[in-house]
Amino acid sequence: MEDLVVRDADVVDGSGADSYRADVVIDGGRIVSIVKEAAAAGCQRPRAVRELDAEGLVLAPGFIDMHAHSDLALLRDPDHAAKAAQGVTLEVLGQDGLSYAPVDDATLEGVRRAVTGWNGYGDDIDFDWRSVGEYLDRLDRGIAVNAAYLIPQGTVRALVVGWEDRPAKPRELDRMRELVAQGLEQGAVGLSSGLTYTPGMYAPDAELTELCRVVAAYGGYYCPHHRSYGAGALEAYAEMVALTREAGCPLHLAHATMNFGVNEGRAPELLALLDEALDGGADITLDTYPYTPGCTTLAALLPSWASEGGPEEILRRLADEETAERIRYDLEVTGADGCHGVPVDWRTIEISGVADAALGGFVGRTVRESASLRGESPWTTARELLLADRLGPTVLQHVGHEENVRTIMRHRVHTGGSDGILRGAKPHPRAYGTFPHYLGRYVRELGVLSLEECVAHLTGRPAARLRLPDRGLVREGYRADLVLLDPATVAAGSTYDAPRTLPTGIPHVLVDGRFVIEDGRRTDVLAGRAVRRSPV
Image (cartoon, rainbow, N blue to C red; front, side, top):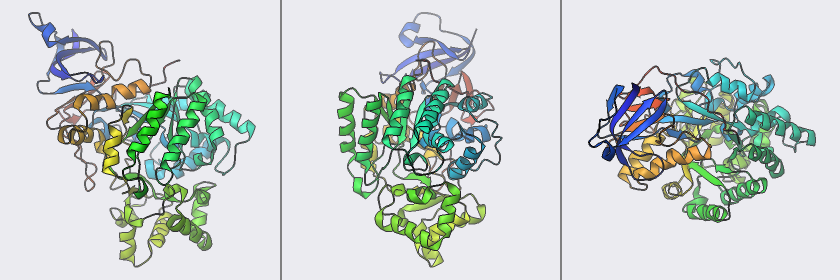
């Protein structure tokens, strides 16, 4: 007998088509048959070792988080309920141009320091890999959900060029191309960049274009956090479209938002730009999270010149009074490139986490609020916190616009990504709530998307971008990465005050046909593995 039959489910199959009622039979980690209600009339219904009554529940493909920062969390926390409880069965790691492979010892140390706010320093991790393939092999030892990997361009540049602001020499560019090719051959699905983060931001377009040519040759895609989400946002989007069209490389725009006051109500301008390119034959997708605040590190706001040389050089400049004053002027008056060309408004910068627990009093307050309590300027507070926590603080940036969020999520190439940073005392609620928030808030309550449309955005469409031939849809022969949800009650439990609260209305989640969430509780199953790029 087969392993499991999910009986009387309302199947939303991930294609965008209307739902239908069916029994879905699972065996050996795959969907082996789908018996629709009409076909079952008058014939014997399928049987299995276990039967699950899904009356009143929707059966959908497992959700694909197109922008995740669980690179160490999957290794650190086998439970990983933050994502599993949302119905996520696949995460895409290696985002924003900074992750942990490929590296040598010195580069690994620099990256660990640079993204402490995202993933922690990793004292509890045995970094027993250096290449992309070795990192994927490490994931294959057993993780809560599946994971794909993007080669981080900033890490590659740090490994070959260092943290300096200069063009790559011809032999260095050749070496970067080799590393990107090797990572793709070892299973990466594409290349990411963080073009407001060092050292990736030091790469000129010509360098990025050459790397994208390699990505295109292997059938991958380019996923940039582009050069501005603020004052130069539209120009930055256009730059990425032009660059990838020249390289012949598919483009996936990371957390494709229009933020800060200069972009209020301007989402239609972005979508018009993308539609023109799509209609002209460009291959473009994008992801967003269904919230208005962003989340990053406090150090990311600094001007690029202040970040040249890596984390230790940043700290040295912050400690120097004259240099620190130059940094302040760029942040508060000019509009630093790290802050997207917009003068920082310290009322919008909320500290969400610190590396040193002794600094926990800053968490949950804006920089302006803490400065007022301390009787000093906001810059003085921010600077002292960066020095004391050695660049560890994470922040929420309250700079988004609800109208823009809703407009972009309706687009024909939209997918879902949490951009979830799991560290910190008060992380952004998107880390624990993105996918149920789409379904509860934007489907059931607001009707921005239909259930079938939304599920397609979160499953079938991202699977197509990742070129996964047997995931993202409820189809016979496909892998049994599935979620069962109650459309009447599904909702994010996470809030800004209680960001680690798990969602409601998602009683069952299966990875490879095994329950990772059963009756609303996390099991001990570690059925996830690395999902490697499909050959061209």
